[in-house]
Amino acid sequence: MPVLPHVLQKASNRAPFVFLLLLFCLPLQAQTCFPARFDETAQVEYVYDGDTVKLDDGRKVRLIGVNTPEHGRDGQPDEPYYREAREQLQSIIQANHKRVKLVYGKQRHDRHRRLLAHIFTPKGKNISRQLLQSGMGFMIAISPNTRFLDCYQQAEEQARHDKKGIWSHPFSRAIAVDKLDTDKTGFARVMGTVQRVGESQTSFWLNLSPHFALRIMKKDLPCFSRYHPRELLHKKIIARGWIYKTKREQRISIRHPAAIEQLVTDSIGLH
Image 1 (cartoon, rainbow, N blue to C red):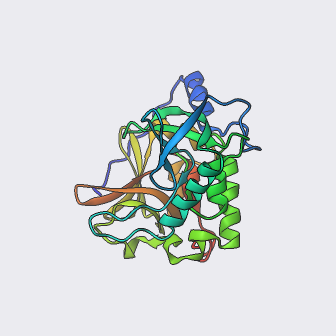
Image 2 (cartoon, helix red, strand yellow):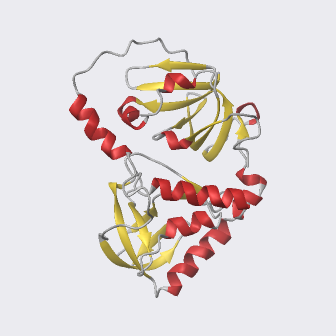
């Protein structure tokens, strides 16, 4: 991407506002996977894949905290473990007579107008956690929907340690940025060294190559309480998220630091 000029960050007297933003970044009830209350009880009509369902009133619900493999489109094969993830979600739904309980995200809908929610069995078992524990998908963290984040991270870490599901397959491995197909879009884990940190009026840009960058919007900076994006300069990292293309460049928007793994050695985080 083009080299962006360095813009000095101006001091701000908006501390109360920043504090309120920080509250949206912190995982609530971090030590548990269960809520104190539910927002709704609903009936599932159809399971699209491992992370999306349709309710009997027609609403589509996208599960928060997990991204499962995709169904093949335009003649492409299904991603590994697409069928297993869908079947596991179907099995959980069927075993509970298609009844689920919902906890809405702070951001209620995505750009596809799907309802964003954590879903639970009638007895309160967190379904995203179950899928992650089985290795049926990747943990995702998108501010402000970070409730139960610690729970989901721990579930993924256990599946990775035990090499369950996708973590037993090359599909889960991070792609080195210099090996990345220039036409690649969609969800991926990408590995590289931060060569440069640029700054624009709204964002920081972490360049892993001349044509690949991570975008961290300044409105999400309160989530980066442990380090500033500039501190990642020259660090080797793995970033996860959805690759999109603009002006012949590939980018991933990073909405929470949990989407970035800092590598101590070349072997950490590759499986």
